[in-house]
Image (cartoon, rainbow, N blue to C red; front, side, top):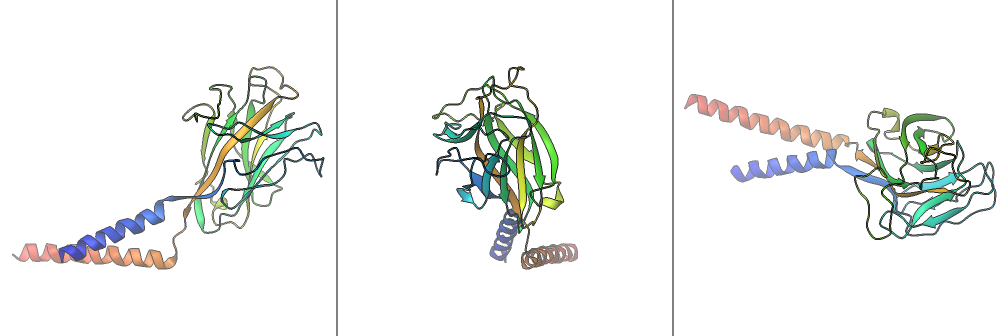
Length: 240
């Protein structure tokens, strides 16, 4: 009996862990392929399409200026990040994924701008790629300076956003996230340098698996059985 109870407890713990753990739905380290400038496209110069190297998703970027240059800059402790020059208010990075089967969406990423690079950004989301809802704003920093050998963690260049309260993002066929430049100010408070840049790295979108009905039924049965065992043990103890 004791072995059975231990097995049931282990199975229950495993089931709970599977239901509550976060899974990477899409991640971009930008190491697998280089980014290069593309000719002007409609509606504006684009940074091309970059497939996620973990999970499934697509990244791109759009600027208003035809002078924008897209390139693979040194990342946060890595050889490559996704960088672009000639930033203006409204220019953006965009990431599109499916969250089918997942909820409690979270996003983490690293981003660095030099002193004359763009300072102010906002994160927004959309279900159709056209109408976006603003989620939060954030400010770039030029410290600490990135290098290709030592990743910076827990600094002003590391970001984490919890969107678990946004139910519309759960179990959706298509979701779009944008990091949009929201002002003309540079990190140093002046104007953004015309050919200055910001660089993005390690953009990761995660979610929690929505339990299948069979999984929930299994867990409910286990809990019911354990409850019954506890009641029987209580009765035996009381009678003795």
